[in-house]
Image (cartoon, rainbow, N blue to C red; front, side, top):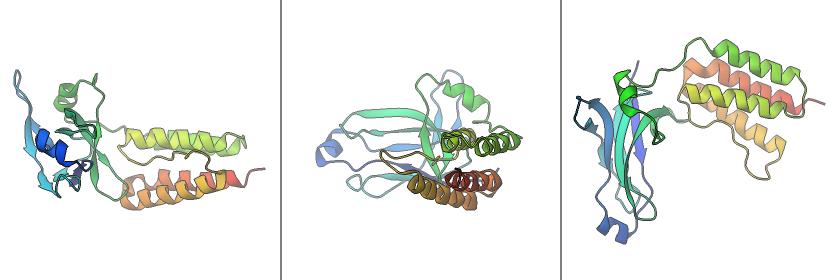
Length: 204
C-alpha cells in the first residue's frame, strides 16, 4: 500500500494556553514492545501554535497514530488515532474511541479495510433509488457513509440544519465526485452514489 502525506491539525491557541501547555507532538507508531510505551516516529511541526500547529509526516491509510496537544479550553490530551483519507488526497488523524484496544490494531498491522464490499453498497444504492421512497436520499447517504467509514474516507454526506434537498444533493454529489477523483480505487462507488442522489431529486 502506498504512503501519503499525513496532517495532524490543531486549533489556534491563545498566549495563555501556549504558556501553560507543552507543544504538540505526534506521528505514526512504529514499534510497541510488550510492557513498554509505543515508539512514535514524530512528525515535523509546521505553523506556529498561535496559527494552529500542523504536524506533517507520511503514513499509510489505516496506520495507528499517537498524538498529543491542547484542547481549545486549555486542557492537555494524548490519544490514539488512525490515518484516514481526506477529500484533498492527503491523510488526516481520526481519533479512536477511548475503549478501542489500540494495541490490537497495531498488532494486526493497522486497520484492515474490507474487500469485495462494493457490490453490496451498489445494490443498496440502487435499491434506495428504485424504491422511490420519500427517504431515498437518506437511504443512499446511509449506504455510502457506511462504505466511506469502512474505507477510511473522510467527508460522507451530512445535511446541514435547514438545508433544502436540492442544495444538499448538489453539494454532496460534488463532494463525492471530488473524493472519487482523489481516491481512484473508490471512484465507482462514490460516483454511483453521486448519480443516485441526483436521480432522487427527479423522483415523483
